[in-house]
Length: 426
Image 1: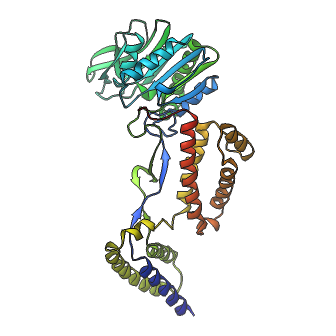
Image 2: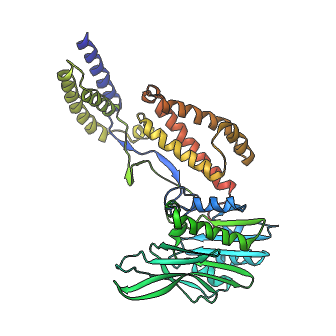
Image 3: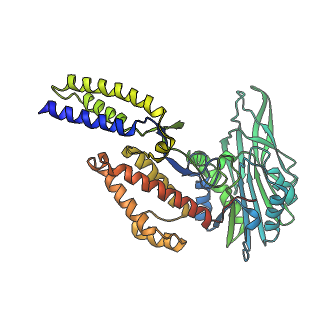
């Protein structure tokens, strides 16, 4: 009986080889935001700082097209720019300055270690600039000590790739200990400047990493500093403040893009094997590792035979039709991959401000105008049940849920981008 089962399994695998004759790999894309984008929940994003602004009562709007922005009726406006990777055009700079001047209480918050924000600073009329010259600590590294005087407090931190601020005609509210040479010739350099010019309050920081999720997550003085900066901005902007947060000036994300699924490390993509025989071999190897009694020789022989046939399949597949390749879709993926894409969806929901509990999620998404809120809620419920079940997480229902997950994540990204007024400026 055992021999008949193995022979049947071998025949089925051989049939699959003959049908597919293809070895290929692809990767499932998952939408994400990159850099210091406010819609990036990762360690380099600034979504946590934006959440602090929300908790202070600000009406947050993400902007990547300043020319089409309309905020009629807003009495207080704060523009938040953190480490933009693309320089501003003259048109964009003039529009931002116009928005601030037309407000009763305009506030500009710039946190940038490079020079891409200087065009905005110039347009609003302040003389302060980010020099772009990196400050060094006592060991010659890029982490000098700094102290900030914000919100009536003095807060000490270590900076990361900070630059010097020059021409601060207002109040210097942050100094860094900079060394020209290791342990020699220490100087105090300006790294934070507060100035009021033409009715616009300008707060400039020369280290954008201070407002990133990773740094805020360190807690202590780092979280205190980000919170103090948010409170300072809120104090100058007043009640009914609208926060316009730059979300489009990032090289790998001019709003939202896609990347490969990750396997633990930031730059290692995961391959999806389209030839089902490879999955069969992986399955057999897992069984073999579990040490089934009395079947070791049969499994080894079967794996050897399948390996030879896969090699033949590769040779045949290389000459296969392009049309066949295009029609092939990923069939075998693990529950871990489903969990990753599901987490990406929850991150997007968090950015949108909606809770993930089903009874609250549906009305929240419907209120934002998302038409598939009930279907999405059902998917989240079912996918959670599958991931919690060891039995269900090993069935073909997982790749089916992965396809739905990728579909929902793409739709939510598009919806979020439209609902928040983002877009690429022509």
